[in-house]
Amino acid sequence: MKTIQKFLSIPLILFGIILTFLITPSFSQSGPLINEEESMTRLSFTEEPQDKVDTPYLETEDGIQVVLWNLYRFNNMKRGDRESEEPLNKEIMGKVEEADFLLFQELKWDVETDKKRLIDEYLPVEEFFLLGYSYPIKLDYSNFVENRKGLGIGLLSKIAPSTTWEKRTHKPERTGDFLDGQLLGPRRYKNALAATYPFRDQSGEAKEILVLNLHNLVSRSTHTQNFLIDWSISLISSHDGPVIFGGDFNTWSFIGTDINALLTRTKKVGLKKVSFKSPVSLMSGGVQVQLDHLFYKGLTLDEESIRVFNKTNLSDHPPVSVTFKVP
Image 1 (cartoon, rainbow, N blue to C red):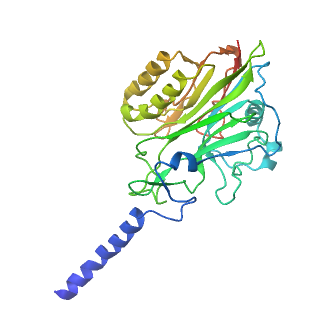
Image 2 (image 1 turned 120 degrees about the vertical axis):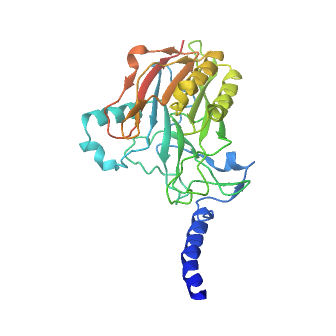
Image 3 (image 1 turned 90 degrees about the horizontal axis):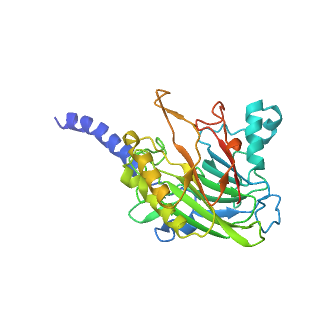
């Protein structure tokens, strides 16, 4: 009888070891262990462009060009591949290179070096300032670390930001990276970045434009999704000047109630929505939903400039390029 009990206990012990391995946080994560109060500052960073352009003000004579793009399935192409790329992808990279602001989600950078070199070297962003913020991972009740994959959102600009803000969701995403220290354990939080940039209006007066980039939660309630949106709306309502607000809002759950909540909030602060269709396929292409949105205030939209690349294979999210004019 004792022999049988010992035999039966072996699978239970092995299961316990495996479960402990999955649940126990991995302290090999990149970046120092930090408390909740410090997480906003310590997990965000700024990097100057490789070829620094000393331009104190945003040039607005030809308009303000913006590219909004979730790079989730970006193929990690190398710099040398630019010469042999497809015509459509070449056009996309041209829009990226010419833009004044890039609102990227699921951007990857090198966590092994002091300088946050982008892993997706295919992107022509050498002349951009990078404001990045990794998706935080919560290890216990109050401690956060940087996602060791170097994965997060990026707000890239042709000039340096004047002031920056960061915010993470107060709850984690229900989904996680399979067997990478998040299943049954720490889950990924999503986040938002905001910054102001100086420009001169047509009279020569110095002003500031506020740009916000947001990546919202998946598989959470509308109430929880509104946490980052309400934080963004609060910044927008207190800013005196033009605003660009965009990102991957993950507005697919609860049969559209989340998009209605988003539109109600943006309308209250005078934001207008850029109208475009860039559906993302879920559940193996069975369902197509609009996740990416772009809003603006205090600017004039160049309707003819709207370009959506729905046929690209670089990501499951189509990039969107838009130009705004400064009144």
